Image 1 (cartoon, rainbow, N blue to C red):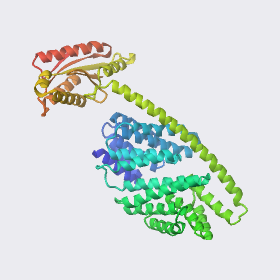
Image 2 (cartoon, rainbow, N blue to C red; image 1 turned 90 degrees about the vertical axis):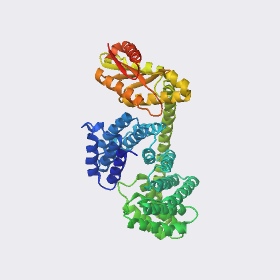
Image 3 (tube, helix red, strand yellow; image 1 turned 180 degrees about the vertical axis):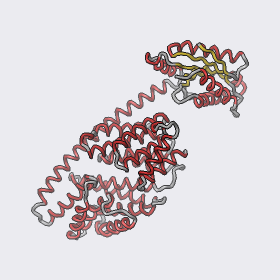
Image 4 (cartoon, rainbow, N blue to C red; image 1 turned 60 degrees about the vertical axis):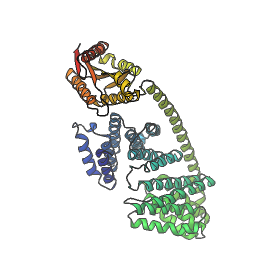
Length: 527
């Protein structure tokens, strides 16, 4: 993993541990380092800045920072960072909408989450970035209670940790705990709408994930993840096969987590209170069950997850009704009606998200087919069809007077390489030249293979000096190949974009002049 990404991940951990102000300063300093402009820095550092701003409570600034991160990811061609930027923007928009109804835009949130998923259809080679990307999407879907969409994302994040290069930082157990927690919350909502059998299936799924998390806990927070997993495993038994054991284990693991610093109001602990109360009631201890849930009601705050609050209040109403409380039944009826309405709303959002997913997947497949049609399959650079499209885009009226440079590149004595070393070696040389040419041009420049051993590079905005420099670098880089005795001749031409066809012709003539002069050199011809 590169040093910039490692540094950003260290800042991320520091921000989450309470050092957000210091992290913001460090991230912004690193972002300004390349050019002095904060927007020009690497996507990894933008990631740290978004998290720091969020921790400091400035959600609008965090959303703006996510936009800058998205632009950086696109500059770097990183599918993983693009996905992270989109999911970060989605979850910040969602939180801002919870604070300000004027900012509440579920469709925009869903669009970002679905786009974040689509971004990952392209390959992201870094498993740590991949894990963060899937986690961001999962968190967004989970906040919308779209459990069916969140679970595969958490599972994909877990699978990323199994890559050989992934550091042993405890994330594997963390994501298994996330899956256990998500299934418990899913079960709670299913209970509220009367789907008992489905709820019990998700309790069973939570138990499986929690058991795996206990076995796989590692890293610096291994004991915390192990205790969290044991707590979730105990909760999963409360409404099924072992309420008596759950009634003992839930408070035991809760107390141990408190020793490790988790407060009474922590979501993880509040989530487990309804399961603890149910375990006590099913074990024949209704008075203790009522006391536990009343303590939980007292701990609720405006920051508590709404579904956990609803589950606590509903459990309280159910236990009060069981004691014959006159006021419990109307409140329970009202709560169940509201839960059913929220369940229908959830299904509307789920349908919308799945429709967006289908559309995005089809669009991505179409774009891939179009890209494949414009790409040379041997070298991976553009083919002549791709070049034609780039030239059409470059010839737009508003850019007609802009300068452009053209490099025509031809491999010297390529037929001799094929005849003496074989066509397989010839293919290797073609791939190597394409790679070196792509490496030596700037980001935003264009490289294409015209066929055989001929390549062309288009450098928008480049002057003669820059074009000659790129050409000479390419000649030297190819001559420096140690695996094969390859050399190239490069022709250079430059002029205004409205003379682009003429520039290509002049570059071709200059390339043949370089060949006649013995090859392994660049020749320049101005319009």
